[in-house]
Length: 239
Ligand SMILES: Cc1cc2nc3c(=O)[nH]c(=O)nc-3n(C[C@H](O)[C@H](O)[C@H](O)COP(=O)(O)O)c2cc1C
Image 1: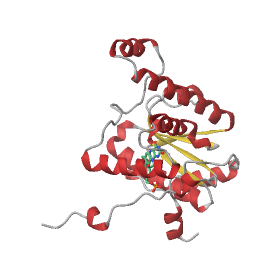
Image 2 (image 1 turned 90 degrees about the vertical axis):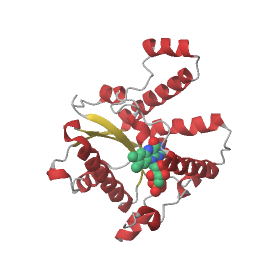
Image 3 (image 1 turned 180 degrees about the horizontal axis):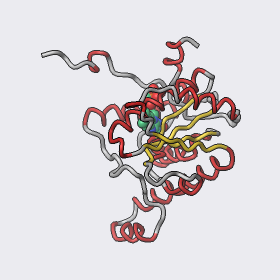
């Protein structure tokens, strides 16, 4: 594909077919992502790539934590506090606190993007149950056969996150060029322990987020094209 086609074809995919991704193809994508630039070539990231049975079990575990934690959030405060001690469902993310409400302009964009997605899916604004179910699909990676978890070394401070972001985009573009789809998923950074259960993650590495990868399903949700800001909004005017 031409570069511009790859760039414009890449959009977040939220419904995957069950067609597996050949491991040689997956390796090729990961090798291409390794071409990314990084601060002083430090490459301060590590990836846990879940496929097959591990991907399925990890998805079940994450989704179960999501449903249980969601239930706890709806309880009155005393029960919530009790649950905090007795359950293993509460978030154990490496980067705390988990982002709640965004600052105003970003919150507006977030809401507009979310509403646009629900509209495509035919979910009404007040249908909390359907929205929860759509959210829950994050944790089974929208049925993708591959889930990739991105870790960084915190000793590299903010440059580690910049470097990880660049490598994620390289990976997404490489996958798109090969006819695959991806969805970057901050939601996959909420629980760390399930990943430790299946992978030997070095303790000094921190989980940033995840990414679903696979063949896109012919599904209306994959047609969603959220707006991007204009150049005027991007650029800071000169004094
Ligand atoms: C760091 C990051 C985290 C994201 N987290 C999620 C997520 O948890 N769930 C989801 O459905 N999409 C997630 N997305 C996808 C964004 O919603 C998407 O990139 C944005 O709406 C723009 O759409 P596009 O990717 O199709 O251009 C994430 C994207 C990024 C870059």
